[in-house]
Length: 203
Image 1 (cartoon, rainbow, N blue to C red):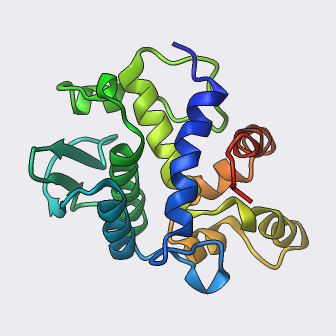
Image 2: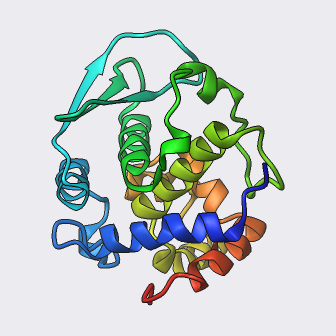
Image 3: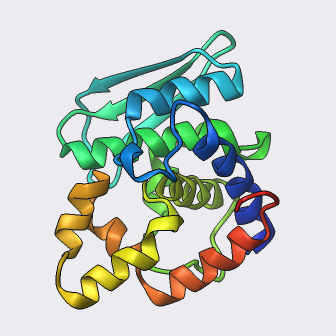
């Protein structure tokens, strides 16, 4: 299954709505890093969903969080034994599942779906199945909320002149360092910029 720009753009359309929410406003420097509790509240309001988030102990090198949907609420489980920046990303990713998933993405396979997904620095040409596509798109959406594209040109300039490092930028946005490497990768930036241009009212 190919991940099309139209699918990414559809997810970014919803990301744009979150970014403009009065609790987030993450295009403003003073709103960085994004407050995860505010993000939970904003997504709950936008999806008309009561969201519970709890930390739990579970094994799994590649599993950082899981989402369970019920008729009256959504439950997000976050792996307790991980760094706070990974908890932030995991929480944001599960929240983005609520925003962007369609019925075809709902899967009983849970952790096995996540294990199928290989992290890429760029958008992969194809993925194996709708569930894995859902994982990839949700992670992209989460990254685009936590590390807004509006700041990347300036951040890249700071990297070049040596005033910042990937580690300090990761601390600024409260995300794992690999996220900084990923979004500042020229190919990823070119691809995600193309997808953002397809989003109406993103500017």
